[in-house]
Image 1: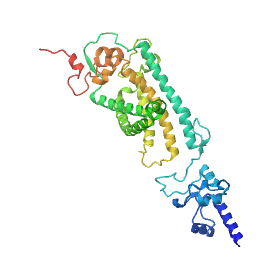
Image 2: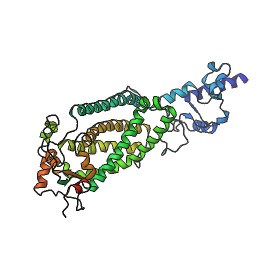
Image 3: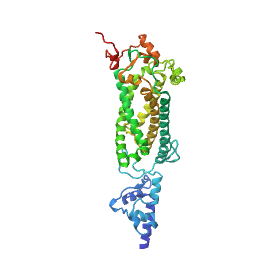
Length: 397
């Protein structure tokens, strides 16, 4: 009788290990009484942590234990249990489904993201990030930065071909400049923090050390999360503020085909914004901006009603990273031409005014409309040009 009971106990342990779950006796009785009941959830459904022996591996014969024997001292530490975990079987979790929809799954199902092998989703995301986004995205940024530096070294700042007249035209109103600067500051904060989080371990970690780099990355991560919504709001304001003057017009295609005359030295006539600026507006601000903002809001968990599963976050991260790299590359050229690349361009965004000679040379069609009275030379409510524009006006005694 004793041998019979021992045999039955051993068979019960093997059956429990194969199922990969430990259920209360009442639950087992209920399932036996109702064969048509729903299948049992995988994983450990209840265990007193003080009864688990973490040093069970030091016991003699540990390696020879069968699944049933091992389950008595280390519940869940058996081959069938971990086989189910690797297959993505949903285990038991006391967390609410609405807050933690994947709490019962340790390993995601198999997928194949673009650029990855067929493997579980977590490993597929890691392959895309480490084998594609990081190396090729970083290379693209370095190539564009090097090309801009080479162009500046060979060409230098684009200077005016004629002398300034001292007569000013208001190019940007105070509201337009405020919207642009808010968007630009948020973009720079996001770009710097994003670059450190993505590439910092390669060029900053060896210099700063783990502790200092950890604090820096933590601070920049929080800056990134808070600057993101500011960038989103300012991007919408910038879009509607400059929409009117960025619609395609006659001559834009000619400007693109001639590269704006940057290599030839002869400016191609354009309206208030040339075709290159319109390309940045529609491609960078609208298209890429919408993708970056939408994916960033998902990563910040700011989309109401969305279930934030790991697969959703992985796809959002890959889309966010690719779109951000392309946006930074596009805006690098815009920042270059708006600062050191063109004489008077930065002053236009700083003070709001440009000299008539600058307007005539870089935006001749816009200058012609101003001189013809189609566009007022003073568009803001202030009666006098600010800064250097005011100083340029002669003072009568």
